[in-house]
Picture 1 (tube, rainbow, N blue to C red):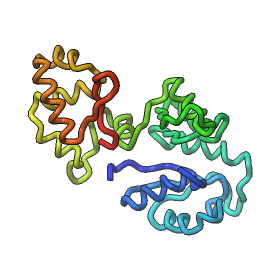
Picture 2 (cartoon, rainbow, N blue to C red):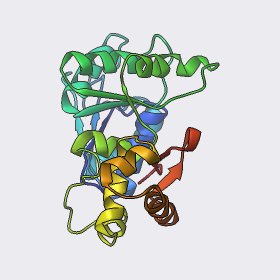
Picture 3 (cartoon, rainbow, N blue to C red):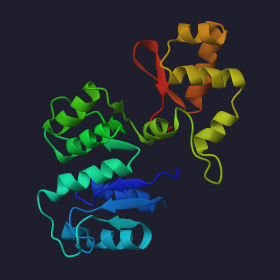
Picture 4 (cartoon, rainbow, N blue to C red):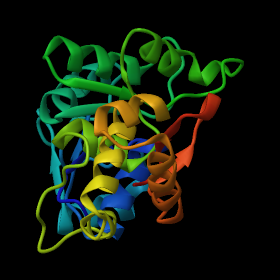
Length: 228
């Protein structure tokens, strides 16, 4: 649990999964509806709607009793974009409602991130285009938290996270190497920046890999492990 509130739209697919994940993790979540606040759409999410009423927030700018209409979804998306510090697009065709939300977020000066998809899959055309246009690359929860709080920073939520406890135990020189990995530097560049020898940097990288904090990347480089 990171203390981040998840905002989504109670729709089929990733919207519902985002709400459910937040609720299962004991977190906070807000559902923004394209219909009246007392109308469940889609009706198959009635149980999730009740859970949100009990443990989250359900809101709408529509009067009670208003049924879901096509124009209401783009209008709803602008509210979602305004509420979020970052809009994360997991998968989106082109065009799609998710791209509308991302465009609203960009216009509002909010961050936009996207999960990469196969270039041959039509439902990833929109999300891949966002990445091409400069959206943050999202590989897992850690990337989202890095975008919100800064690389390696996390909110103090009654204690340290598992990764923070591991990092706290590291020697300062090893921690410095991890910081340079976050910047995407090569082994030689890390050595030059830290004042360590190449052998010492490789030893530190081996320790960080053993701790599960980094993984080997392309062409002999290293990168932060997904989920950390």
